[in-house]
Amino acid sequence: MKKYNIKNYKIYKEDLKYAIQRIPKKSDFTLYTRKELKVLFLPLVENVARKFSTAQPASGVLSILDLIQIGSAGLSHAVERLQMDTLMESLDQEKTIKSFLSKRIRGAIRRGIDTNRADMRIPEHKLNEIRRNSKNREMVMMFFNSIFLSIDSAPYNNDSMIYQIPDKSEPYNTGLLNSYLMGLLKKHLDDREYEVLRLSYGLDCEKHSAKQIAEKLNIVGASDYVRVSELKKSAVQKLIDNVDHSQVLDYL
Image (cartoon, rainbow, N blue to C red):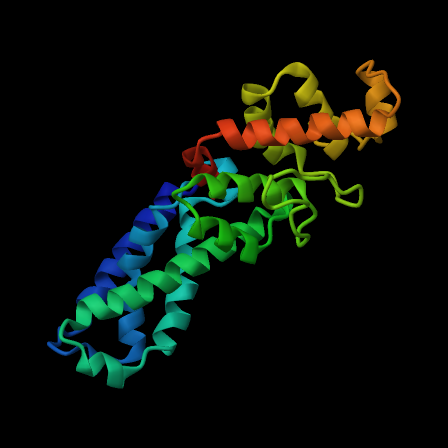
């Protein structure tokens, strides 16, 4: 993760404080210009941004200042979409406008993170689907399903949560995997399961065929593909069963 410049951050805070002080206070938010609203709610951007983790597995290379910058752009777009007639009818204008802006600032930051962290190749619509299931085991299943399957393909068997690994998928970014995914594999899988997934997906190496994996791991039998496939299925299922959803949230 990039480190942010503390000096630049202090300058930003002072400039913002001065800009807000220059705006005359009004009892009705609809009386502010859109330009004034963009300045008044800049502190909201930082509040939202600081709720996101800036650990490398979670944000890739983005610092808190990067998140604030992305969120500020989201704020600007959101203010332009404000419907003043609706706001005028609200009994609590500040609560209404904060709720509207926060949702869109949060969305902008998430999209920014997803874009800069695209090495994992989980598309935005998949990430949003996973987040909507953030309080149950299905979230963990969807997370690993999205990683281990090609991006937009459906689960091989949604009921049994058994997944096939597509040969056409591309190797993942080893730097990000070493800091997150590889750690989960090492923690929850035995050596053979770990090696099967590592070699099958090409996590930090070239992808291997079932036959190559069978040879490396001394797997013998009538069908090396069937045996390797079974090991892959059981390894992914073991991750789903043992990884806590909070660990997935750390990434999301």
